[in-house]
Length: 409
Image (cartoon, rainbow, N blue to C red; front, side, top):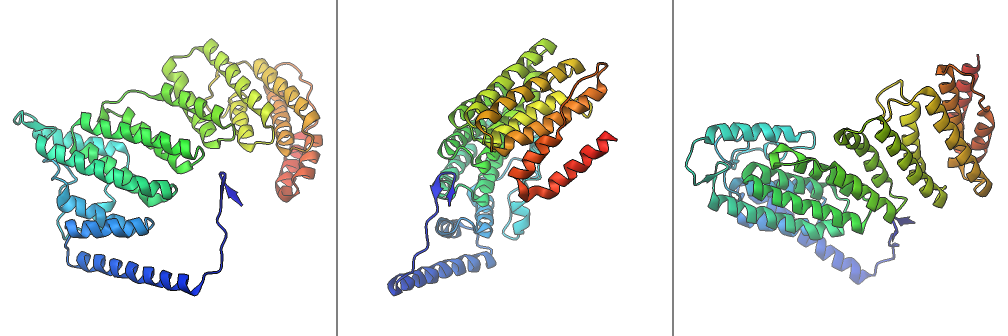
């Protein structure tokens, strides 16, 4: 079976010689692991232990405990001490692993770093001009070198294991150390380089959801006051366009696009006319994509998102809040007629019938809120076709049938 175009290797029967080679590798691996454990038990978080973690992580980057040990080596001496007032003070050898690895976990927000920097700045205000962001220039330069070297250390691992959580988490930790320990300009340079890396990773595997999530994380930091940031929503929206045109099946790019749209329009100060024009443009883009690949689920999901902005105006905010009910009905009716045309060439594509079913139900719902009588089709015929093409979800279609029956009474 292929995974994003990369064929999985098949298993072959090993020879006795290969088995002995594997046993030798396992023996060396366990000896390396024992060496690390003995130094950890002795609280020797020094350069020697640091080098041992490099060897083991190159063999097994999934070993998250060793990443934690590596963090402690950096905090305990390789990196300079944070400036006065920082909550992230230099760890002593007796510091627990939990203390050194969870200070900036995924659940933490960049606002916690902002608070840390405010505390630090309040204590360093008025000090000698030789202090840069609360730290001597020599220490800052040393930290830049160490953090850049560490980021470089993980790149070969990412190329070989692009979906290993622990490599991504360690890079996040390193980047957050840059914010804590470096002048803003130096920290921003490191984060901007990281954005370039995320772009390269997505060039290599356009649908790597780890890389997409990581990109959103990096962009959020670059936009934040911590790094003297500005909005990047226009740039990121353009990036989704580029990635979509390179691969229409890129679900992550379509998803990212949908997340950016409300903010994009808000920052543009788009009025009702501009919002309506934007809606038309997005409908044209997704229609062109569906004409090429109507069997592509990711395209239908984005079409569904755009349609939800038209029909779900009562339950919450939409990108086109000023549309009248009549205009919403016209949009939905037009899309239904357009989708019907696809049936002529793709009669056995279930996504087409699911869309017809969903939008016909939505049209009937809109009709209830309009002042004029609107003639709508019976969605049951689309339901019957969906049942035929997707019998594995019979329970779901039973629920839809019950919903239709209830709405008729």
